[in-house]
Structures are given as C-alpha cells and as structure tokens.
Image 1: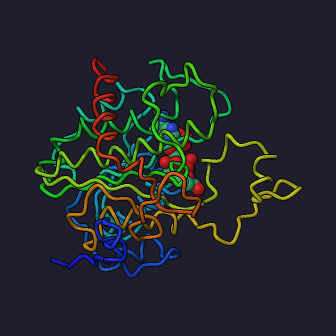
Image 2: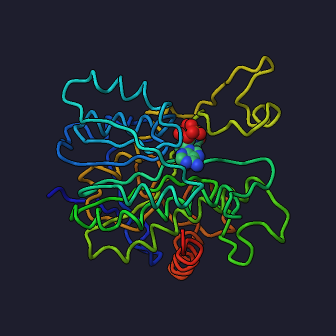
Image 3: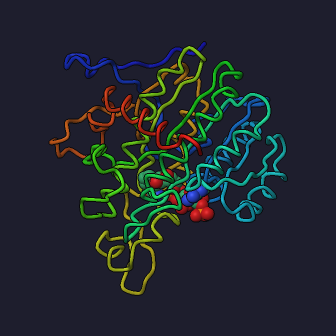
Length: 333
Ligand SMILES: NC(=O)c1ccc[n+]([C@@H]2O[C@H](COP(=O)([O-])OP(=O)(O)OC[C@H]3O[C@@H](n4cnc5c(N)ncnc54)[C@H](OP(=O)(O)O)[C@@H]3O)[C@@H](O)[C@H]2O)c1
C-alpha cells in the first residue's frame, strides 16, 4: 500500500494534517495517475461528454477503467466514445442517459446498474442561471442538478459501491462555495432575492457537505471527497453574457475567449478529480476538500484569502442536516 503524504502544517491550529501530493496545479489528469492500472475497475462520470468531465473520462479509460458516461444528451458523448475505442489498452467506454434535474432519472439509472461500482465522479453541473429557474419538482435548478440529482444517484448506487469494497466518490465542487453557507431556511430562493452566484455557490457548498455526510458510508469501504478544479473555459460559462465575460477579463471586444494566465486546460482541470478517483496517494481518505492536487486549508468565512475550503462546508452538523433534508426532498422520487 502506498503511504499517504500527510503534512502537519495546520496541526498547530488544531486542524487535522493536510494531505499533500507531488503534483502541482498544472499537472494533467493523465500525469496524476501515470502508472496506475485501472483494468477491471468500473467508473461512472456524470457530465462526461464535455469539458472537465470528458478529460476525466479520457484519463480513467486510458488507465484501463471501464467508464460509463452519464449524460442527458447521449449523442453528445459519441465522438469521445469513438475516440477512446481506438486507443489500445483503454477500457470500454459507453453512455447511459441521466438527467440530474429529474430525480426519477437518477433513481432509474441506479436501478438499472448491474455489478459493483468502483468510482463515481459527480462532475455534471450548471452555473449562474440568470433568472430563478425551478425544476419540474419545484426545486431551484442549480441545487437540484448539482446536488440533489447527485445525492439521488449516489444513494441509489450505494449497494453497488459497497460491493466494490473500496469505492470512491468524487464531487466536483467549486471555489464559488467559499462565501455561501447553505441556507436551510430558503434553499430554493422562495423568500429571498434570487442571485445566480449565490445559488451556484450554495449548490457547491451542498456538494462538499455531501462528502462530509458520506463518512457514514466508511464501513462499506466507500470514501467521498470534494474538489475545486480551478478556472477552465468550458460550456459551463454559457449562461454568462458577453459583458460579464469581459468583466472577468476572459473575452476581448471582438468576442474571442481570452483565458487569463492562471486558467487551466480541461486536462489540467480534471487532474484533481482523477487523483481523487484513482490515485493510491489518497487511498482511504474521505470527507476532505482538494484543489490543485493538494488538500486545501480550511478558511473562516470572513477570511478574504483566495482558495481553501470554507468552514461552513465542512461542518458535520450542517452535513447531517443536509443529508436529512435531501433524503426528505427525494422521498417518493
Ligand atoms: N469550468 C470551470 O472553471 C469550473 C470551475 C469550478 C467548478 N467547475 C465545475 O466543474 C464541473 C464540470 O464543468 P465544466 O466546466 O466541464 O462544464 P461543462 O462542459 O458545461 O460540463 C458540465 C456537464 O454537466 C452536464 N449537465 C448539466 N446539466 C445536467 C443535467 N441536468 N443532467 C445531466 N448532466 C448535466 C452538461 O451536459 P450538457 O452538455 O447536456 O449541458 C455537461 O456535460 C461542474 O460541476 C462545474 O460546476 C467548473
């Protein structure tokens, strides 16, 4: 077994030691699992047809894993499936329909799953819908898609993951969670004014809280960790108008995308997902938050230092409360 690299830099503050790896922010998804053989391992990647998800699928399949791309538009995954079918030694890649905004779809996906599941990457997401949008179930769309759909999927697949004996859940969160505690009084913005970034941030806080709550599955050999992939220009920004993109400095006057120097490629953005999904360096680690291939320090909500994980997102009490809330919301789905 490979030894985890635990660095005691926060131990003086009473925090548990942070896990470090040799990989920097620019490492690619392929590099972080170079030499790892995933033959015989089975993975599901939600939203695996585009962006960070596609790069995640590619790295896991090239390492030998059988990968199911869970997508609401199966036809969009066909080019990636065809590409990976030509790579010698790659695991089989196929697609299954999944619409995370519809809990019945997540439940059906899990019900039809056969055999053990070793890796679940909760990657799909939507960001900053300009107006308050509700799903058919009456839930705010980002919370429903980014958290509730994945919660339904993971709980439905729990037995399959327990059958693996060493399953890993990876939740793709975002730095946007930092300033947004989960609002249990009004998660769907029924009474407070809707804000696209607060709604997105709240959904990403929910994702981190899910990994904390999932410590209850440790006895089944299931671990769950969350991550911030960094900044990557993908289809995720499609709800942002050109003025917003210009204000972020990532679009010029002619409408061309102009990534800032610290922006990553999808392959770099997928590295932390793939590290958590498959590297021996994080074996048995659970309930933690990573960015740039390292465990991130916990920051107070009033701390303006960039990066890190907000204390509100790691709070056990909030995690347990959200678990109950999500279970109740999905009852009957
Ligand atoms: N890009 C960044 O800078 C950044 C930063 C922080 C966090 N993230 C997170 O990284 C993850 C991947 O995003 P990305 O940047 O790679 O963007 P992306 O290319 O838009 O990928 C998101 C994926 O989610 C899928 N999806 C959306 N709604 C869905 C639904 N209802 N059911 C099933 N799948 C659905 C999308 O499918 P369709 O093609 O059908 O829409 C798409 O494949 C997201 O969770 C995002 O929040 C990204």
